[in-house]
Length: 405
Image 1 (cartoon, rainbow, N blue to C red):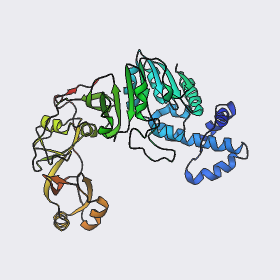
Image 2: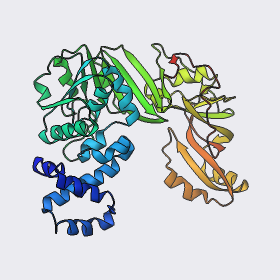
Image 3: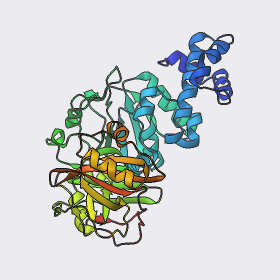
Image 4: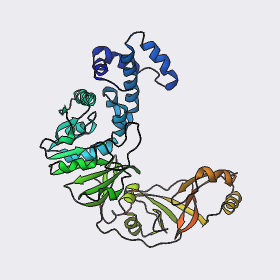
């Protein structure tokens, strides 16, 4: 449900806070929700009871992104969904240190608060008065000095050194918006802004040709091997950059002239690059740095004779490979008593759901199957079940990288 200003006033009142505290100890599962709401309506106005239940559920869902603070903060469903991973939020916020900042389209204030905590003087602007009210409550809950105002950012921004922009990437019905000019507001809104540094949060799957008219740096950010988002930096360099975040710090990889790797049939190791490297067009760089080759110029798999580990990739020991043929693969697995497979795929139309039943697996052994292409031909690579962990300090930083910060 949508929380109104009136309901928000109740939720932030002593009575509402007491109700929310009570709900932290209740079973909020879907099976129990109707019974719980019926009980609450005996004591509270129906709309207030529904709003409290909604917020209590959102606070539970928010723990992964906001940790222990989630239980004190105010959210809307779409603002929570769009909120960044905490490592990404903290990493980006470092750019605000010592700067005046306008957070354009601040929502509930998650990025505003991170930038203020990093040392920025932050003003958050949003057209939605409920979100602005939530942002103010969130700043008070965390004792963070950030200001929030209702404003239409399409009319322009007040002066500041940095503007941060996180446009909505779903429409009113929750459908994803795939073009930057369909964002709300559209990306072209930033063309009217005068800040020396403009930082824009984009979908990690953004098509690079949509950014052709913006001369800046596009940074693809992953967290522990999962691609989280893309960031457009105007006023902070140019080109494409991959960034890998962990609890220990950040690794960066940028190369103005990415290398082209040679092609090879599968060797002793199958190596899967971090998705940020893939999106930044740096798979060939990684292959060269590891002394390996690509299987196919259009496929982001690398193969090599040795594996010494790198935080930029995962690797599986190759047991065998063959042209893809279900009958042949089934016989191969049956002979080796393989009863369980994990199926990976790049560049193959075959789905695990369609393949696994056809294999008629039986036995106590397990392998990983990689369905892919080698020089344009469909193949299957049989690997050990689990990837071999990389050791981040076992080899020198690859060309174009900077050490952990």
